[in-house]
Amino acid sequence: MIVKPILNEALCNGCGLCVTVCQCGGMVIVGSIIKRVDVADCRYCAECELVCPTGAIQCPFEIVIEESIDITFEE
Amino acid sequence: MAVEIGLLKSIPYFLGLSTAELEAVKKHVFEQAAERNDMILMEGDPANAVYFVVSGAVKVFKTSVEGKEQILCILKAGESFNDVAIFDGGPNPASAIAMTPVVLYGINKTDMEAIIRSYPDLAANVIRILSKRVRHFVSLVEDLSFRHVTDRLAKLLLEYATDHGPIGGEAGGHPRLTQQEMAAMVGTAREVVGRSLKALEEEGAIRMDRHRIVIVNKKRLEEMSGVAAG
Ligand code: SF4
Ligand code: SF4
Image (cartoon, rainbow over all chains, first blue to last red; front, top):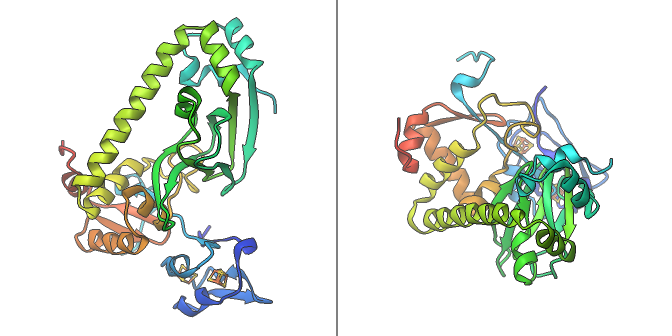
């Protein structure tokens, strides 16, 4: 499962700042309220959280130690 | 869900009480549930109760006049908050918000006073818990006054690193943290946290992996945070 920013529609005032700042075109606004983040495009850069004036977006991070991750990365 | 003796027993406040005594205490305990981002307490409001976290995570914080937030602590199962106000009679010293869905047990001020009077042994538990809290705050004051932001962040990352990294991070391990929350914990602005994370990444201490902050060089973080690397 790909983790995406958490949206709180109730707090959104439709200002559109998150859409402007998102470099991946991943934010979708429907009827002037933020509805979803297109997961495939989202890089989890947390820029949208930074600009949102109402705190409607949250990008929480999990903090882990390298050896303990049990999935392999291609690098 | 009703208040459970088994859960009460696991709260350090009630350490050493017999099952019969816990049954008596239980009569004064109320249960309260909250969703992520629900406000539980407002700083400055009259203090009505002491709370115990049964499950989930609660953020205790103060807000400056300019709206800047300083996180004092993040509490998990078994830990208590608002006890200072209950015992000194002042208002709530800080605000509290749910970081995840939480279940709390609460005891009203007058009931708590009566409980301590009936079970003086509890006072020793309370002293131990409050002393630990004072120690935490002394260390926080030290961090805020003497350490560089990036070093403070290094220390925070070490403290909040989960060994097994449960997805969601809410159940057993530490709650996930937004950069806003990290900023409020190390006492800086959100933008500074972004820059500090980048600096740590350039130094090869961490790697940003989407929603994960992966600690690649634990030793380096320990050096920065002043923890003797072993
Ligand atoms: S985290 Fe970054 S990429 Fe994802 S929606 Fe927000 S701004 Fe766009
Ligand atoms: S920046 Fe925040 S308030 Fe503005 S549209 Fe996006 S989510 Fe809504």
